[in-house]
Image 1 (cartoon, rainbow, N blue to C red):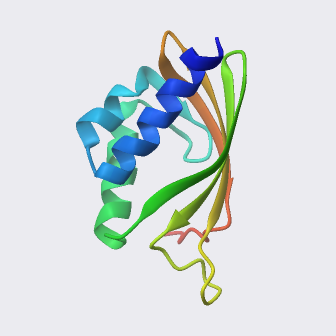
Image 2 (cartoon, rainbow, N blue to C red; image 1 turned 30 degrees about the horizontal axis):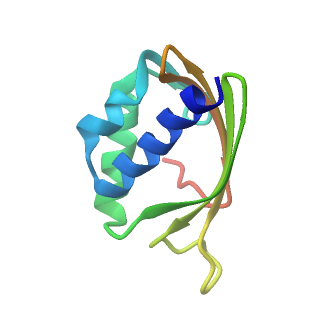
Length: 118
C-alpha cells in the first residue's frame, strides 16, 4: 500500500501550496479527524487553511521527508513564508496520517509554530 498511502499526502501538500481548497478537501475522508485541531470533517480543514492563507499569504509547505508504513505516513516538513518566532527560522512540522480508501482519514501532528489561543 506504499504508493496508495503516499499519493494522498503528496496531493494534500500540492493542493495546500496551490491554495486549491477544492483539491485539498478531496484528499480527506468525509469523516476525517484532526487530532491536533480537535476537529472532525473536511469543513474544518477548509476553515483552518483559509485562515492560514489570509494571515500568511506566502505560506507554503516544503516536505523534507515522507515515510510510509502500510496505511500510515509520517512527514517532516517546513512551513515557509511564516515566521516561527525566531528570526530567520521557519516553523517545522511533524505529521502522521492514516489513509483509508485513498483518502486521509486521521492526522496527528506537532509544529514549532506557536498557536494563538483565544
